[in-house]
Length: 369
Image 1: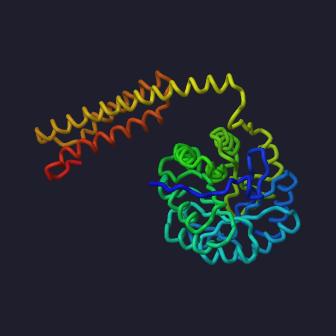
Image 2: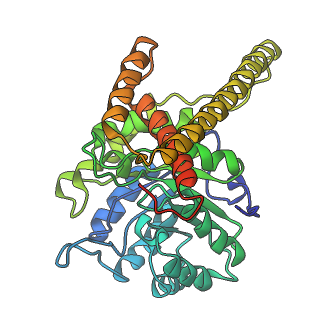
Image 3: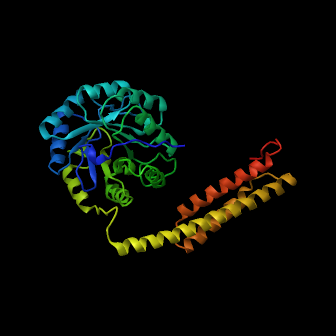
């Protein structure tokens, strides 16, 4: 069970100015002093107050550009002096943390690969213990909500109260239009559990291409997230990493100007009353859905008992493929997307198989699944 997190509201960090969206921006990688300073000054001219740059880059293959290392922290120091911006970077080890603290980095974030490793998370949490440095935690590479929450708990137990998250999507084996599957349902679940947790989206890594920045950023803000982490480079075509997903400060000004920021709450009594009535209808429908699901599981259990009595295996994949396709076609007629129907019915099917498997194994017989 998830623990309660003791966190400080992001508006009290002294980093960001309202209204939303709160922006963190800068190059994927700090490459040269000139590149860092030119990009930072361009972003500061837009009113952006928090500058990001990768110093140590986790690359899949050796020999790739793995960042400039500690030398780049000196450039971040200069950004602070020259522009007054807060600066932040990714850390993946105790040594990275100590170097950042030594050079006065204002905030750090934990990358998706690191979040997936509780040993590294604990090492970093121990390193930031007894400091005031804010920590943002990216989601793990796979859609594992408990793993994400576990990382947050480790930092909170280390005394980090200026704590937030960055949603950058999840790795996918399927061919999709984006670099990473947005997996909004996971973000929604985390937001629901911890409504006061500072929550940023990373549309750069989610999309993998600058052409998706606007649509992904708009979706994130429509869901009520607090801000965005965006990769910006003074000359993206020459970037040493992730060139296609970075934008110039000038292009970012245009992009930010197109975003529609919606209010999280309004004082209009008529609106709130109508919204309350609609939500009540949703509650009634949800209760009916739960009752129907319970009835369906009851039937699945009876099917499992019948199969067991006649020594029949649980899975008949041919039938399920036919049922799923039929549901997808029916869903289309009702305005429901194939992806949604497939996700819902596959989850129901997995639960039904589990129920039947429990029945078949109830006397110690080997499972047919």
